[in-house]
Length: 397
Image (cartoon, rainbow, N blue to C red; front, top):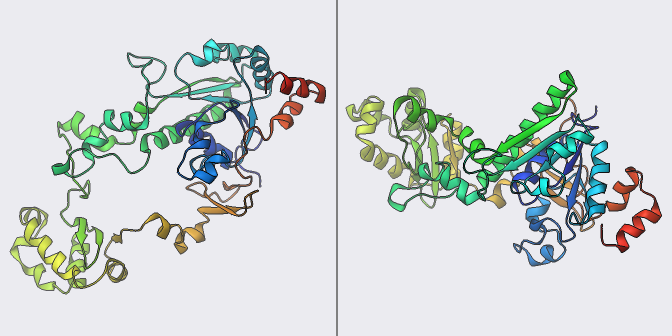
């Protein structure tokens, strides 16, 4: 069975991460994503995490979210390039961009101009603060949004101050929110026959991903603070604990789990200790309870304890590094990381985070080299070989 978005064409003007991550989600689900790049290419192509790949303009950060896409280069400063876009828009379902506000309008490629050409067009603009409001013209980046959204204020150890997440969390949140928004607009179009403007603000999206801490304050006036490695449940047995030569995270939240933990640690006597009779008592005596737990855990390594406690139905997890988890048999079984053939040899990339019974998402095409499909895409739009050659000579493409 074909994938859910097979037949949908997206003109993708996005760069960096928030935009490309969103279009990648629909590309995995079958959409024909035409990546429109400058002649220098998406800035992530040259990021220097690995010099060899950066020199190829195929840096890992680019490869991560651009599989299944096709690339065309256009110099949008030239009127002929703008006309090419307008011609492509006739057969497109979605235009997706993440420029600062006003850039596409100045090029003559904003929503009003393009929807006049194709009334069924869905136009998605992803920005830090959206198209309205006092911050609409403010530049945004992941670090700023982590700081501004409140995410950093609730992350980290109290003694050490606010901490960023270890990845670009607001970029990916913005991207997945945009993917949901575009999918919603495409579905709505099946009823109305009309396209529309989709306005995605990454700050809005970040708040939408922390509804618990927000509602605790807006409803009950509770201001969440940094809780280190503690659980949002505030249970003292849901935290990080030291073992013999590393750490393990426990997620013990119920009476049954607490009893199983104490027995698995060889401390069933603690169940009769009045200091630990219930959750309020355990909270009041957290230091004593932690000492009991860590004294027992100090007798073995994290992975051994993970296996032992899991067998006892105690929720827990040792700390897995990236190079370890990518080889976990669970991920292999779920086909989360997919190996595709590429011009550089086999390449393993992360696919979608879900499966469908019919038409599951997947990586079918390696990420494109810069401008790889320019001629192909122009021919599909009706350009002849002579016209394409002239556009190349004139550096339009």
